[in-house]
Length: 261
Image (cartoon, rainbow, N blue to C red; front, side, top):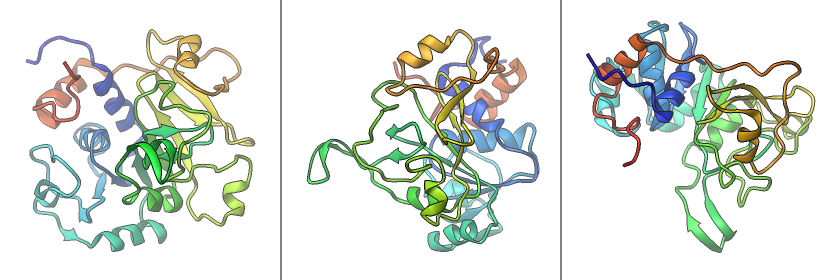
């Protein structure tokens, strides 16, 4: 038996992210917590889930946690391995139900920056990984789910650079831009779960994790969070059985779910 400890913040994110997946779906996942969530979902409530890795591997059999979407563990007895451009074509043609995407910065409309922090494109403070396949996912995915930590440096009023589109300037601006995907449907963070108000497309609290108040969530945000009418739900915690599966079968080495010391 694993130690009887509650889920840490990274395990909580992975669990909540896994709950966004329904059985039978085809889900496009990237490196990190999305891989943990996809494998956890397949081992628990979504055994008929098809995992599509960004590198092009389709639904490998389970085994050791991959270190990245480009690692050989993502190809383990996979029935098909596509080139990356063809895997993006799967999304464009509607063959993928959901896609997961992380962020370095995110704004109130779900637009994402993974390019640079501070300054401008030619004179930045910190250079990040860039787009990779991020813009393809945000532009093409039928349903996009964003995932990451929440603090005022990440939840910002204005992005330093827009790498991947959410709802652009809100309202119908995404549709007017001609983007085929449906845009972000949820943001999963260390504080709670957020969706987007249907008319304005502004980020809205859907539920908050146990112990997180609306005031605390707002303190961790650089823009005003919309609130639902009535009482704000509390995000359900994973059961001991699910934590056991997560720690013993999904990510036993704590590759993506161990908290930094």
